[in-house]
Image 1: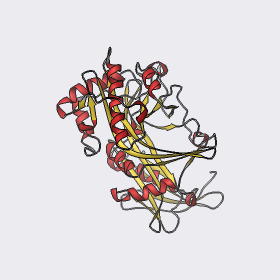
Image 2: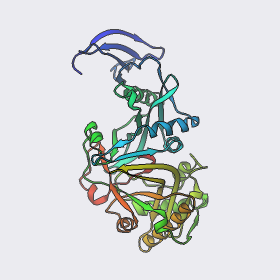
Image 3: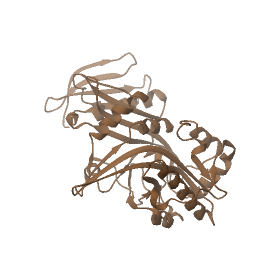
Image 4: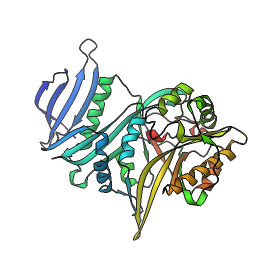
Length: 377
């Protein structure tokens, strides 16, 4: 950005310092920060962003915004390196994802009442190298073509930083997941990628549908479920061991959409499915493919015959989903998992996921694998 010239300065009612700046091209910027009131006078938060254009305002999303979110998503397809174009329409499910996270905010930018941008951020409690950390994750950003390069993303990120400060939430670093085929985003991100890559297995429900097996869980099953999840993922980076209390709390966040009833289990396996209803449109070489998806949020299995029970539960869920008009079931995994060969064999397609994290990658992550929590994806 080069050198800045200070144009004005002042404090708001909360003691935050607002500084108006001009860059070398005489474009306006706003520096906003807060400094401790006593020695050693450390910087408590900091942001720099362009002033919002006239008529644009930013606010937090509500449940009533789902239709407008879906319309914005339809207007913002993702261009991939191979010339194909992907449109992901989530609408209500983005709002549900925000509620599922331990702490998250979804900001909307409106121009004269029309939604033109959104930006979602969450703080993910996880582990890296065996150490508990909290990582900041941006998981849903869209800007209408008519409003790009106006600083809307920076403004919404700045608001998230202030919200975290007020809540007393600090982060140890940041991370993003990137489709390696999306070169534009790879070049935009300044964070180095890890060597270890998890993958997403996309299973066509009708093709692998099987017989009903297992049963829906109840709160009394929480210790058993936690044990199965830990057995399936304990070695993986970014996995936090589960217990019955934490599991019950997470399933209480959006119980009408993902509660105990959405986890099906046997003695040695469990699969929990969120029917998020994502619509995905893939356009390439003159063709158009449409799908409706559901996502496995939790899965685990015991050693021994647990992988076989996992397969049976996945096939049972696919039968249920196919009957409800869902075409595909999505599941994240890593190749070091004993279940990886099964999952690859069931999948219609596999996409490797690049993890870019500001924290150093543990030396053995490619042997341990990387756990992907879809709530923070």
